[in-house]
Length: 276
Ligand SMILES: [Zn+2]
Image (cartoon, rainbow, N blue to C red; front, side, top):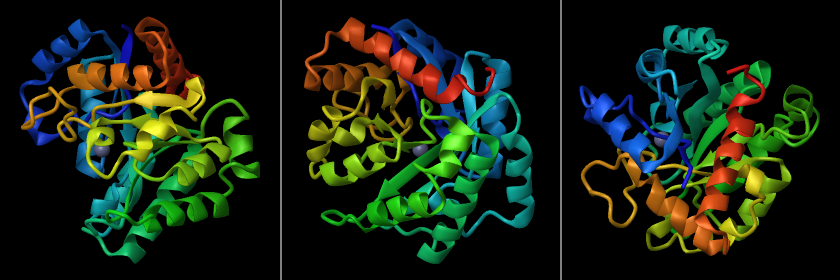
C-alpha cells in the first residue's frame, strides 16, 4: 500500500539521533512522502535541516497554539523568512487549543491570524490544530469564524490557491460532522490521525465518509497519538499504515486504491503549487 504521513514531528527531541532508522522503517512500510511541521522557530529550523538531509521529506514552518505566547518578534521574523523557502510546503502547525490552553486564548487568536495571513501571502496551505474540551466545539467554531473572516473559501483563498488546491488542512481531525461539513465547504483538506481511535472521537468515522478523496490525508502526529498496535511511548511514521487501513475500510475502499488516492491528495495539497 502506498502511504504518506502528512504530519510527523521528526524534529522532536524524542527522535534526536534516531531519524535515519525511523525513516528506514517508514520507507519499508510504504511511506513515500512525509511532512515535518514546525511548532516554533527552533523546531521549524530543525524541520528545514531534516529536509536538507533527507530530500524526500517536506517541511512546514509556523507557530502552534501552545507556543502562541512564547514566540517573540525575532522568532516570528525568522519564520516569515523561511516561509518562502521552496523546501517549505505549508505554514504551521498553527490553530486553537481550548482544551489545554497552554497559551492564553487571545494570544492564540493573534497567532492563528498571522499564520493564516502568511499562508495566503505565500500560497502555501495552513496546517491547523483544533481541539476543544471533551463534549465542546468552541475551538472548532472559532477556527471556522477566523478562516471565513480572512477569506478562506472565498476571494482571498481562491486568488492564492485557485479552486483545486486546499488553502488549509485540518490536522488530526477532532470534531463533529457538522463542523467537518463547514471546513469542507471552505475547500479545506482533512487529515486523520490515531486520535480517531480514542473514546469521544467516534464522529470521525462518519466524517471520513464525507471527505472527497483528493482532500483526505492521513498522519501519525509522531511522536504522539499512537494508533492501536503502535508503541505507546513513541509513535513513528511506519504506524500510519494502521490508520490508513482503518480509514480505507470506513470508505469501503481497497487498500491499494486508497493508497494511490493518498499520494495524489498529498501531492495536490502540498506540492502542486510550490514547485517541489
Ligand atoms: Zn502536530
